[in-house]
Image: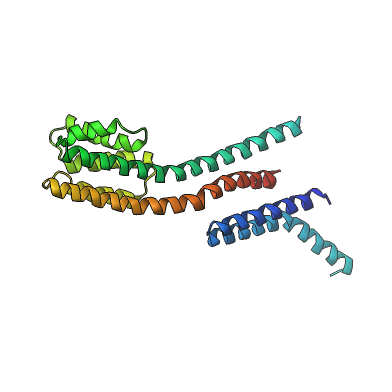
Amino acid sequence: MDVDLIFKVAAIGILVAILHALLDQAGRKEAALMTTIVGLIVILLMVAREIVRLFDSIRSMFRI
Amino acid sequence: MQLALKVIGSAMVVLSSGLLGYLYAIDCKKRPQELRALQGLLQMFETEITYASSTLVEAFEKISGNSRYSAAALFKSASEILKNDSSVGAREAWERAVKSNARQMGLDSEDENILFSFGKMLGSSDLEGQVKNIRLLINQLKIQEARAEEKRKQNERMYKTLGLLGGLAIVIVLL
């Protein structure tokens, strides 16, 4: 597995945190919440494949 | 080769989105400025019709040369409409001028409505009524200006940072 993915997730996490703080300070709580949710979805989409692989390997490990 | 392409592409994305945010910030700054300029021009307009007792077209033309903001263009186009087309009244000319200039001045619909209601009274009463109308408009614009200023404080920095960070986010996702 490539380490790039971890860095990407970390970078997006930092960006989303900054954006959330910024929008919160500007008094746009809904927009801040929205960016957080969008960030979450984007990261989930990115790691979905890896999660599927994890499940597959666990399944093959226990033969179920 | 591929790396260079990536770097150039991401730089372009960040730059353009940053610029977009910057443009929004400038738009934010424009509205209070224009509202302030408009108040000054209206003061001049009041003086013009009370002491110089000039006609609407003359007064509009005179004050439109006195400001570098787009607010002056509003009076300019109103006077031009009045001059070129003798069938339109003061109210309609004013409304048309407001409609064609509102976007450039960064006004929102609330400001527009206030200006429209000013146009309704424009040129339809005696001098005292006109002066009262102008004062009313100036007071309303003052309130709008305070609101716009508050909005600007909140939004200006946010738009700038948002543009830049949004560009960075896009680059990271695409990378």
